[in-house]
Image (cartoon, rainbow, N blue to C red):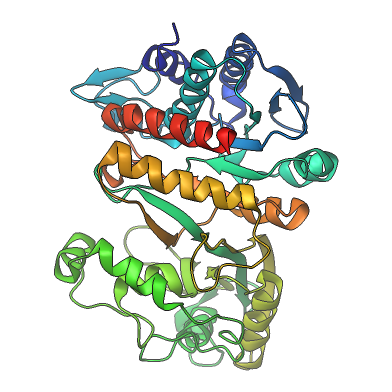
Length: 457
């Protein structure tokens, strides 16, 4: 008998922190546990070597005419620091009420185990289920999936044999309302450094005769937004698509209290793109944000220097049709054009991520050539959620990014059904991460019904 909670406990006990070499054994333990679990369910498992942590590729074959789903997840987790803020040991799963606590409980071990349990139940009920299933589980998601591009190049042909991707690495609004994510923002990240004098200078001896790099950087950054909240970079919005009416209507069903949201954020007023509510801005609009800034003395007390250098870290969240490389070039060119005299600029390129958008069937802008199996999966999802949760799901874009989803689409043509399972209160990436076991139970039943319906056709 497959006990998903006990299996999840065992999974969490492996401290699989991908970014820290000190957790190498924890990574190996999680990988081995997962590979063994999938083998026990009858899957043929290949542990694909990468430069860092292996990717698990597990297959259940069958008649080539059967539908084929790829279930994605990741077995790595964020570091648990600061450990002193945990109320229970980070890698010793603890159940309190209807929650299981532990690093990775919600991101992504709990949701992944939910989908594995659903597959186990579906196959137990019908060992001959006419559905081909592939599990694709990576160990580097929390560090930006650096090995995934090479893996895609190698396995693209095999992935093209599938009909759609299914995953649970997105969010629920609350434990009663399911959200099916149909859009993810892309990313364009880079650092900018401004250099003035060849070394730090005494501000009394040399102040007033040269441009301070901190001042120059502040002047540049201040030009990148207009007072009303738009990104002030020529061409930045050229490729942004209009939001379809059904998307706005779907978001209205979610509701949302702007005053409560402002109180939650601890702010007095919102600063959004004109014509968009705060909740629309989060899901429908691109951004340009400053994620870090520095220069000069940072310690306690005073040190009266003019620094040699100042820097800022910049990220852009992008919506469908925006190209990260194009946006990055536009922003860099704008900064160069606005650079004050007396300083030099240097850019350090960071990683990109393409935006992603899939339109559920029966909407006004559904592509006419949408895969019939994908459309069946979306309709099965809507039916299953209605039956299990007692209300229909909402089909919404999300403000966050999962760059590999767009990469899979670009390389293989496969779209994704993203069934969210973690909650705002689950504390992803923070101390006391947890996963709601009631959500897990309903998630297992929902996914089992979806897969069964897709198999039935």
